[in-house]
Length: 308
Image (cartoon, rainbow, N blue to C red; front, side):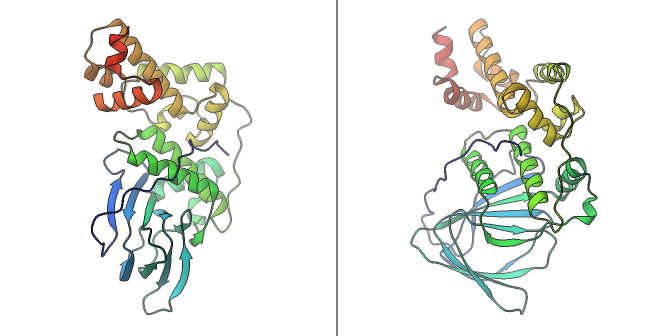
């Protein structure tokens, strides 16, 4: 199993000032350009009755944080099934099912937040073929409710923290997370489960060099995991693992370091405006570069240039 994304501590955002009647969306990755994965964070009302939930076509994972609740669900005109849910608990929806009715009531004064992760069916199907050699039509994720899984929880909180950043990471970070989620769900949450096809060898020096050359040539562009993996002929999932073995860094970490090093060079050796440097090195804008530069180097780009 690939080493998980960097662990992210659970954070509890301030509750909305008014009482809620329905779930309130307050964070979304929709505008971040993430592919194959949609992440949305909600404030949940303290009490809810008669909420009709429509099962989405995507495989969905819901992560609970904050206070605990008693949640009840039923199919139309069916019997209510109740359970208690607290921070770190998960719900898994297989996608494509019938609508169902939900109601709940908070058991603690602390409000509940939820993170909804939606994986596209195309990503899940492609991962089943590439990593497990399976016909995706014969595989289906089995829904579960009120369970815990340390890896899923860690990935969920890492993505949640990314959403909270003013300038979240780009496609490479999200695609790595999506691949990890898809593989883990296919291995452990399908009726049959898949067996990973392990590569018989690692990356050669020539393959690593080819990937690095490709990164350097396209550093100012939005790099994707698929594009990097194509330089080696491995699947994105296996490429991520093998690249870490070869370099000691994930593709996302390596690309970020390369971008920061080029930004430092341009700040030191040229008078190029900081906003232009941000675009030249693959950051979304000047604010994004400043945020990451200060986080990684402990100083802003302007201060670094003044100290040169």
